[in-house]
Structure formats: structure tokens, C-alpha cells
Length: 171
Image (cartoon, rainbow, N blue to C red):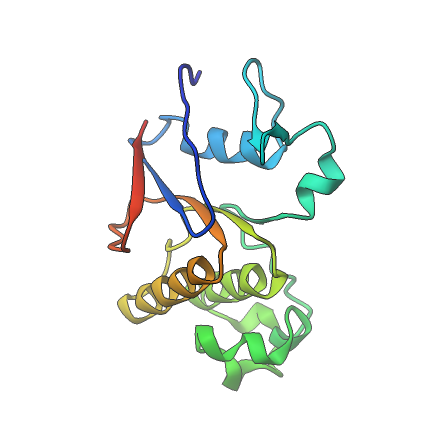
């Protein structure tokens, strides 16, 4: 159970959740997304309770969980607009059914879906799992661009991420 947590995230901010397995990182992300009910406490968005209107809250967040939510029968390009594939290095696979992608490629496609969503707040549960070093670097550039445009990110990870002006919450 998570207790006594509090943080504020401003436009352009990033909060990295760190801790051992089972510390509550995924639980916190699911609660922030409105996927798991809060036992106590409040999630505020611009001073108002964020979870009172779940459809409105869902419209401002992009979720990336442990599962990539990639449909094997669809082509890579059927998951996202084709222009979203280049930043994650998947443009040459646009016509390929997603079932033929490697685990890392599926993760990159899931990240492309988050980027293409246009949502202000990205909630990312271990987004770099399965990514090689070049893909982690691309991911960092996407995070930097999202934040520069006023977006916000809350992510859990076991992989070191070295991004500027990032808050860290140890659980």
C-alpha cells in the first residue's frame, strides 16, 4: 500500500518513479490513470479532482503499460499514422503485420502510439523494457520534445534515464 505520497508536476515536467519490484510503481501509475480506484487521497488536475470525470481525464492522458497493446493481425501502419513511425525507427516496417515484430520493435510501436496520441500527460510503466541503446536514446529525444511542447511525463523504470530537469520519486 502506498501512503504519504505527494508531488506536483508542472507543464514540461517529468517524474521518474524508482523502486524495487513490488514497491508500488505500477500501482501508482494505474491509480493516476484512473484504472485503479484510490483507497484514500486525491489526484488533482489544475486544482480540480481529476478522477471525478474519467472520460475527461482519459482524454488528457496517454497510457503505456507492461503490455504493448499491439494487435498482431494489423500492420504496423494500421496502429499509428505513418509519420509517427520514423521517430521510433519503424518506417520500413509500415506494411508488415505486427506479429512479425520483435519485442523491442513492438515496444517502439507502443511508444509511437503514445507520441501520436497528442495527449498532454504520458503515464509510462517501464517504457524502455526490451529496447536497445539506440532505441532508449530515441525515446529520450521523444520525451524531451514532448516536454518542450509543454507535455508532462510520469514514468517508472529500472533502466537509468538521464533526462534534464527530471524529478525522482523513490518508492
